[in-house]
Image (tube, rainbow, N blue to C red; front, side):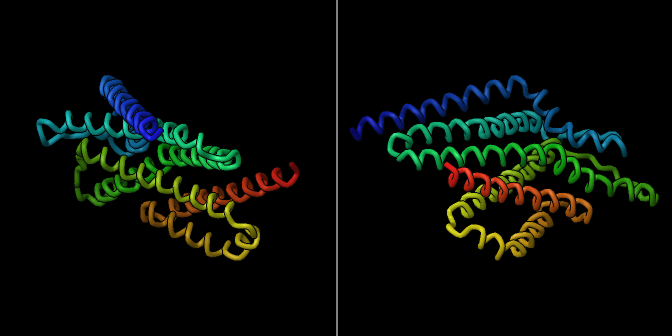
Length: 244
């Protein structure tokens, strides 16, 4: 029996490796399109000030950027494959209520992940890029000519760092959901620590946004609304449990 489990784990690892290789191959074949999609949110706002271009200072920098780009996307995709294999592996040893709990957490995580990713791509990334790029226009208006030449590899690092922040927010809200749903007197907890939680969420918004008060207010409001949606979802889930 133990050999059977080791064999299953080995097969799943092989499938994950093959999935990563195939995903990497596909991403590398469409590397120019993917790179454009990574840059597009920033360009939409940047063109209002000035046309931007990217430079390379190393003969292998473009190739390395494409490799990093394909690896980044492959890692993101294979993570979901890994999550799927892990769940399928442990489900036979779980009770029915545990399986329902796992499915609920994964469903909530996917909703948070999609929401945070869309927020990152359409709001956080262009706003952050626009905030830092805006200083060039200010200095130019003051007759101090500074020319910004963005390195392609550094922009990709900038994109990945913001994506990590987005993923962290998703995981943070998932942990909040799991923690609140695990508390018996969750309504008392919500009422007691609501102000503290709002304060922590505002600090989180301040940390992950540029030092711009408008950006901090917008993202902070969005995070608080998102938190309230979590609370409402928890209430609806628990009401359905009671009625059924």
